[in-house]
Length: 245
Image (cartoon, rainbow, N blue to C red; front, side, top):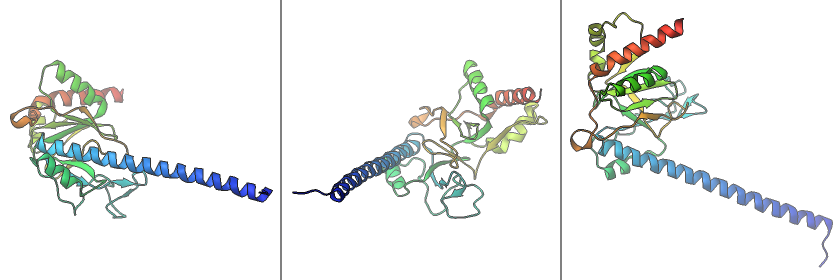
């Protein structure tokens, strides 16, 4: 058999093309496998939130193109990747693990959102003061609920529902009503993004203090806001004073 220079080149090109095709198939399979593992992890976590902790879970939109656009399809969306999907039903609090996992399987890729104002409200402060406040509260032996860290540099403390409505009166009674605090409270109609999701395409949300079993049925009972608010307000105020010096 006689091989020409042209046929040898064709064979090398064919082998190179085959290797590239194999690499592409492997990479595509790896990416698909990663997506499946991520979705499976989300299903498991949602089932835990609903069944073990007694939280409703709301499917949320995801940010695309680095947080510039939103998967909801609205070109003028003001909260890309940080709001509920209007067409997707929520997973109700208390759903069984099987029910929750089956429901979440119908919305692959959705962000995991937890509605405030039901099982809990959320006190939102800057991350650094939040970390210091958490350490102080734990040293004092006070019961602290779950705490989220967002990629935007916020610490979110879960407290008993109703705190958002009571916040102005609580701050007044504690003498913090006239202070310019970087502190707010999320209540009914608002949501927080929960792990394993990212927030608005900016990065993952993490637990600074994970939810733990407590109360009847293993559901974590968040503390009353008044038990944490004094420390959170003080540390937030001190952070603002230091920043202004």
